[in-house]
Image (cartoon, rainbow, N blue to C red; front, side, top):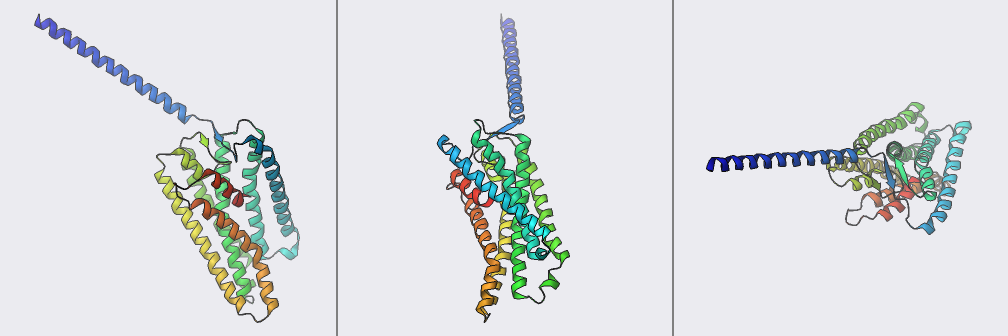
Length: 309
């Protein structure tokens, strides 16, 4: 009797072990299917500027007008600086590239945003999200440093007018613009590749940006989040420092001028650039310096409109 009972217990134990193995294998299969389903996402959802249907049509009209003005204005500036030989100066060379970056940023974002105002499903494919993200990052990072280059150019023109043409040669102008393009391309490839290989399905924004994407990912983003914080801080602080130092030196030189006409001329050459700097850096500081506890997607969207338009 006892040997038979032992054999029965062993058989029952073997069956339990086999059953648990089957369950483990089944769980592994289900986990594998889940991972495959998550990793095979082909499109994402852009939540848009607003979820209120009654605001879709008015916002479509407003942003269409803004985008048309941006395209006409920047294309006109690029064409004019290219055609008119009197504008073949270092300052207008840098302004031409700023116009190109502004046009590029708006073109990357606005057309899709306008389509989403009229579409029921604001979806975007995987590559259609990764490509605008790459171009947006490249152009926005490049704009940081070209704005600081313009500030340095104005400093040389006002504080060292006799040496301006000697220092700001054509070769130096190309170097001062080429380095930001190369540097921003390096950062863009690094961040875009790291971000798009991760999994997410809904973006609470009206375009593909790095911060909203990371907030949607939730976990396993500490490394790339740290990289973005470090590089963003370096880009912001270094370029803003050049702008601040340049304008401090300009102000010192202007206050030393005895001629009121000379002061007026100096301020007029810097006024438009200074306004762009205030709007650009102000909106970025407002958006990226918020903590996670006080961050609001709606305020982020409104701030984004200022530096992407």
